Length: 363
Ligand SMILES: Cc1cc2nc3c(=O)[nH]c(=O)nc-3n(C[C@H](O)[C@H](O)[C@H](O)COP(=O)(O)OP(=O)(O)OC[C@H]3O[C@@H](n4cnc5c(N)ncnc54)[C@H](O)[C@@H]3O)c2cc1C
Image (cartoon, rainbow, N blue to C red; front, side, top):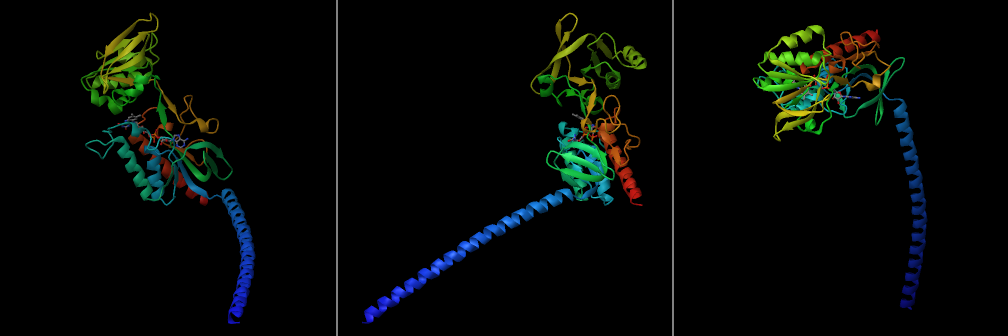
């Protein structure tokens, strides 16, 4: 009898357990369903918020384009003036100086400093005072009524003022060997690198004022210079031509182009040139090749929006462009000097100008 009772009790308890389980499952099922609904709700809310954020994006006080000497100096000054600048570093983080092993003419470094190291110090200093550096590149620029719109590959930014410090790129011949020996005898800047070739033979490629200036500068440093020019006369101003022709340390090779840079695997040892009229080739021994065939400023996105000269350099007076609130600093607005220290100097100017402009527009 007791056994029967026990079995009945067991059966009943199993039954209640089953119903409980079913109930539980039902409940959980519902809960899961509820959870899914909840998740969906949160997701849509998130999306809406994101959308909202995109349209309501903060208008920055100042956006700086470029992370070279000009951009970073502007950032240091603007950040110390509490403008909390946002800086887009661009495709070349640190700017042109990252391509050189030694900078010997930037004040404050009597032993010289590695180019990349110097750019890292600039960035550290700018970030220390609150510059937000974003490793992205501006692909569009638009002036709106009360702000500027800067589009990148990933997003877009708004700012009340903009400093353009996107630099300029020296034109190259396009030879493989030129790339191989860049910074190892191939140079685009005599005032930067000529000092390393004192007492040696070098070639200068070009025929304009820059080529003449570079040649004359090096001749003064006891360097034997050969100018290689693809035409039979120089494009340079008359006075420059006269100075070049009078200088005993400068020789001319006309109607010729460099076909190959020769080297020992480490440094330049010469160049192979071809006469464009006769087709004859010959080798010239030299320790360096200086290119002086022009620069191309990085200003494509500002074309027809900001005043430029015929080479694409932004025209700026004390860093002020023709658009109020837009300033330009460094090589991008400097067809003449193109030095680290002059770029840094104009970066400082641009930040001070931008600060003044922002303060004025608040009144
Ligand atoms: C090999 C070499 C050696 C040199 N050595 C010396 C030297 O010893 N001493 C000296 O005084 N000068 C030297 N120079 C020259 C010096 O590097 C330049 O004058 C100086 O870097 C110019 O600074 P910048 O800020 O104006 O431009 P850059 O240094 O050219 O910087 C331009 C910046 O703009 C960014 N940028 C470009 N496009 C965009 C975009 N669309 N959006 C956002 N950012 C963008 C780039 O990424 C880069 O960060 C040398 C140059 C070279 C190439």
